[in-house]
Amino acid sequence: MRVLLDTHIVLWWLSGHSNLPLRAHTVIADPEIEVLVSAATAWEIAIKSAAGRLDIPDDLSSALEANDFDALPISVAHALGVGRLPLHHADPFDRMLIAQAMIEGLTLISVDPRFRGYDVELLSLD
Image 1 (spheres, rainbow, N blue to C red):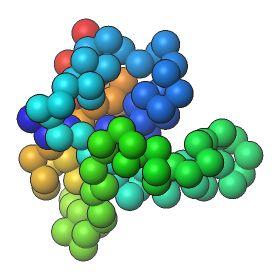
Image 2 (image 1 turned 135 degrees about the horizontal axis):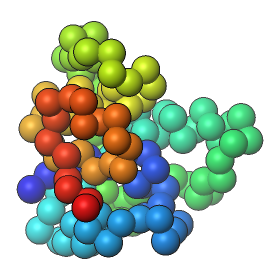
Image 3 (image 1 turned 120 degrees about the vertical axis):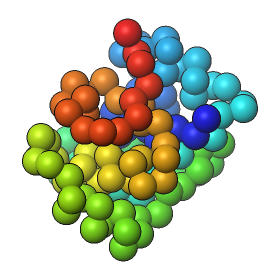
Image 4 (image 1 turned 180 degrees about the vertical axis):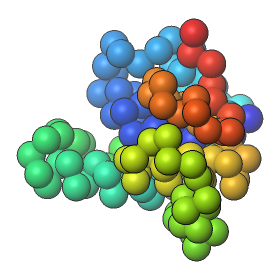
């Protein structure tokens, strides 16, 4: 299985936050599962951090590498995929993650209920 983490899942994992669902923790910790973090997530974190709305590790890139998370770049196909999505969700970062998961055949890990409106594979966290 290959999974793509939503931004809040990345932040909860890195901080050891108790909001991280046990199922998500189990999957992310499994060495047999490839865990990816989108460039869109790093972009969103950087913007919110610069605005003073979020505290992040001093070196986010190193923190992601230390956790064996693979980077998922944004491609032209991903960008065009966002434009083909129905507008169930207006957040551009989340829409990018949905398009990337669909195009790359990834399972998306998120607690955002709005993701269910899309034809994307979601990890069941129930």
